[in-house]
Length: 133
Image (cartoon, rainbow, N blue to C red; front, side, top):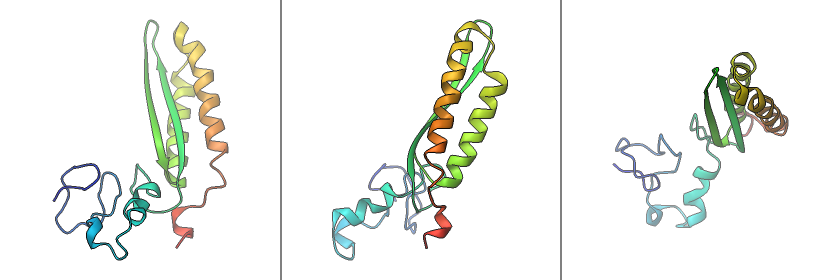
């Protein structure tokens, strides 16, 4: 079966898409037939783990500096509290340890650390998915 939202291949008996979290029941077969119900799962689904619950939009950046070049990675999207915690600590600790080598990285690293910390602080009041049910 194909996901009605992201068009990726999923199991035929799946109730939710493993990739985007949208409910796989077609709109015309929904209980009330509303479009809001169809997209409800997508808006409140963590884009990393796929769990349904409260999410917050965050952007975390990671930088690994080299003398002449740098390697960077980012995650942007609606994440649950558990994934925000894991991603923040992983990205920020790697940046703190390996982000300073090189001229460009020496300037970029503090910006990434401040950004990650700022977004993490604003997501601390988010409830974990288990507490919602």
